[in-house]
Image (cartoon, rainbow, N blue to C red; front, side):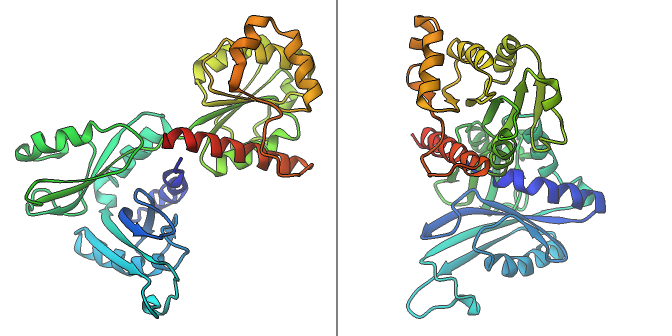
Length: 348
């Protein structure tokens, strides 16, 4: 669950307002111990500012120098870092890593509408899947290093039969591809859309859950039967918010198709209806806040068929046992379990 792309969007929006050219830096290959892995990205402006991280903050400063050259020349570059070795302190950085990174620098000009990054940003915001193909090595001036391809219309006819299947790659894996004679090498990566999480309950303790979940890359929505609680000022990071009778949550569950739903309204009758709706849905992770006694009381109020449907999907009490008791530490425990579970799903 890599949220790095979403972290770039506020920086990108500010750069567009200012009319600034940018460079997109993409880690296309790593070896050994590195801070980030292939697929991680940062945006760099011409004045050296950047958003995102590829290392602990040291490589980014050197990449800013390369980015300035890329913007001046208009040509992409592939930069290789070998980190570590006996007594090595890379350019005095003292990174202490024992690995390597190949980082592709792609120029994005205001005159060209910052494409295709603008299109990738639109797809991310619309939750529309898209695969991008990053040209890492090429013997053809028609397909230069640094080019980012999102559609076959961007590809010279001579290369379409080769690149077409690469663009059809849609699973959440980054792949390095090359032709038999290595005349063309590319890194293909689908746009990592955020997993959706639905909170059924908008009490005070829901606020840090929304904040933490959004910060680690989830798209969070909130539903509650109390209109006074469903306020944008309380949940600025939420994607969508709704209020209504508890039974109406079933429609929101069906529309969002979340990967996870957390029942935390602290209202027993509402939580029973939420659990019933979730039992009859395909949501794979169902979290319930509260002690075991409350969980048992709620389960006993459900029909036997609904209890059976919940099965192993129900995580109750939700959250890793971190020992905390404040709203913030409980929120941290909930989000930690979400990250651990969904990351495991994505890796298997």
